[in-house]
Length: 133
Figure (tube, helix red, strand yellow):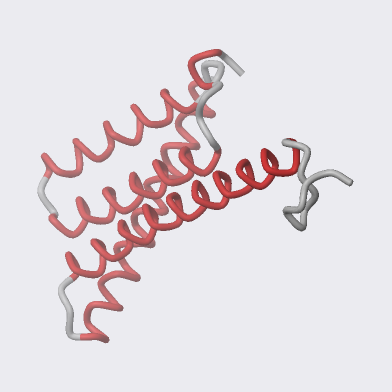
């Protein structure tokens, strides 16, 4: 792993990719060329930022197509859910984005709690909090 990527948690990278997929779905629902172009560029930029070594042209194209396909699926499911629940597609996609961010925060809180637990175990106290015997 390069030093640039050493501080990235996989959960953060996954959340970033999730938001890219939601962005692609929003661009598909917007239906204008500028939104689609911006979303496709966002996919390329995100892939470039997340890889440790340059991908081959074919690998990069496959990853970009996967993200785009994820956006297409998300757009279709969001449209269906919006119609089923009498909500707007924007509301559904906003909920999807909030869910991605919430999962990222939850994983960070769990990681932080685990570190705090490890530190309390390392400071000479027994797990019951009474100190060493």
